[in-house]
Image (cartoon, rainbow, N blue to C red; front, side, top):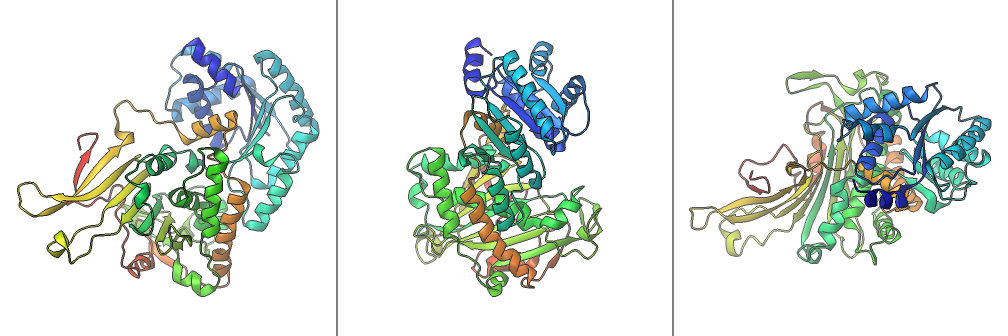
Length: 518
């Protein structure tokens, strides 16, 4: 990295970063590797410091050793350059902190002043709260009362999901935090918004004249969003049994993906304008006003025992820390309607679940087919055109069209033209947390959720949860390793559609033309 690159990076990211929950899993798997990657690429200058904060006692040396092990296990770069590692590590210190004791925050403020002087930091502060939501308010108050918001630079707080359990609890959290921080200084993370292909949705839509004229109810038949996991609840049974798939994935990741697909072109490529358009989509969602609406449009499932890849899998109620009589959903699917001029009549089908056959996040845009009684439609059962955006773990897009089968006169063959971003030789794709930490340090809130986004999403989800609580929507069992309850397939069948295969489940009769020569 050149000295010029280091200087430019320092101008954008000079701050003290406070990692609350520094001994937790999120810090180890995501935050430490993200910071090292940013430093190695020159996006994090030398005028920074990181203070790890947690209850358990640790020395600075032990803390740095933990970080080194984290980078070795989870980072896309390895700390093989001893000189680079030593320069990076000297910016990290650790402090044991009782977050309920304001005196500890005053000590932290004194340490911050020392770090400002040592590393030439201009008083900027970024507080990363990898904590339980009920602690967001108390920590915010103690940051204020401990003097940490009195420095001359900017002060931003980054908050992990879940942001509340429902709209009232989210409102209470927000009321507490906004007593201390302004809305423009609150960065609510949905890490899916940091993923490369999610951010690429805007470019695909608005930088290609091919798609935007077709991006409406005149040409699109339906949109399918799948976020599937092969794992069960693992060691999160206690948390998950109180949350469920609807709150854990639906309120945030699924609806955020939907807004990115459905939003209108923003007036400017400015964070607030983009978020304005996303909020408009959420406000246009058709609400499920009655229990009957929920029964008709939403599917609720829970995995039972099953098998995958020859391995027996336990049912959800057999998992550790899960109530043996639990009625918590591990799967949900829904038909969502966006009632505006662009999307009226186009169903958005969303599904997410645990213990499904494939781990993937994909968006499938199915275009309307040509009439069956004209041209090739008279002779062939033509498949509709698809635009598929692969978000995770594969990254890329493909466009499925109909083309003449080689060697024939009129036979038609589906062809998929694919760009596989994660297949490119030498590509080392940034992790979502790298982009989000970098954006927060620069004051770019584009890919963080604003309060009105959070509240509108909860308003939509809460009606489903309330209907389920009153008995609407039977909890349907599905075998672990399957694609969920049969009702989820019937949901699309009612409209004449079906779930398209996702990554790892592609049809055999499609010719693939890819950037990797597949």
